Length: 119
Image (cartoon, rainbow, N blue to C red; front, side):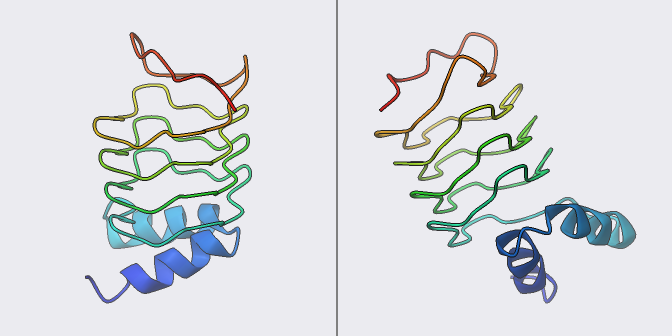
C-alpha cells in the first residue's frame, strides 16, 4: 500500500471524493482504493471516475448518484449496495459480487452488461 492510500480511503469514506481526486491529480496517480474496506460507507454522489476499486468491499455501501465511469470494480463486493442513479458506464464489473444490489431505471450500466434484479 502506498503511503497516501490510507489518506485517500479516509477522504472517500468521509464524503470527500473530490478532494481525493484532486490529491491524485497533484500526485499524478489514479485513485487507488483496491482492496479497501468501504462497508456501509455513504458514498452518495461520490466522484470515482477511473478509480481502482478492484477487490474492494462495498457491501451495503450507498453509491446513490455516484460517478463510477470507467472504474475498475473487478472482484468487488457490491452486495446490498445501493446503485440507484449511479453511472457505471465503461466500468469493469468482471467478477463483481452483485447479490441483492439495489438499482433503478436511472442506473447507467456498461454497454452489454445485464444487471441482476434489483432488491
